[in-house]
Image (cartoon, rainbow, N blue to C red):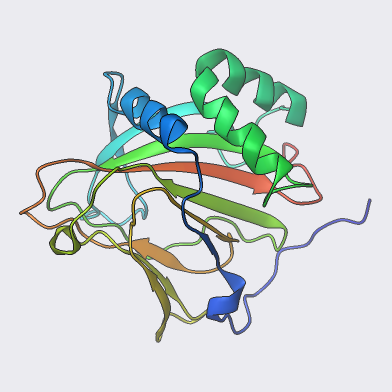
Length: 208
């Protein structure tokens, strides 16, 4: 297998980002949301390391915690997810049989943004074959709640796409695209919950 080397992101466009609406059947969507709304959240996640970055809630289900500096296998990550959260594993099985066919799961977790929390512009990876899938499990969301996922050009000088957190929507994109979760309006009475699947398309991370 050829080594995948870090890249300097070139020009991105909206077509690099795949959007799937009505991603899950309604019963599974509701089951996922009910599970994510259960207790078990930890607090302190952040999307950039600046001192003033917002902290938010998170649930780690499976996979890498320290960006590939752990000895793991693709099968091991899947087994960890299946044991920790069977309902989320069912979602992964659908994804790997559909839009993420040929991908290996490297991490699965959920984020919960309360009103007033803001993300920071960041990359999920510096490797060209690493992808992120974001699933929005809510059954309803009002435009005034905000919380869009916004994608930027490589140098951060302009927006290439803003994705509304539409209920039951799935977004898949290369992890080298700069992006940010915009702040949730103080009119929003609930957490902005997202479920993430980090994947590698051809090379599986090894400790380095």
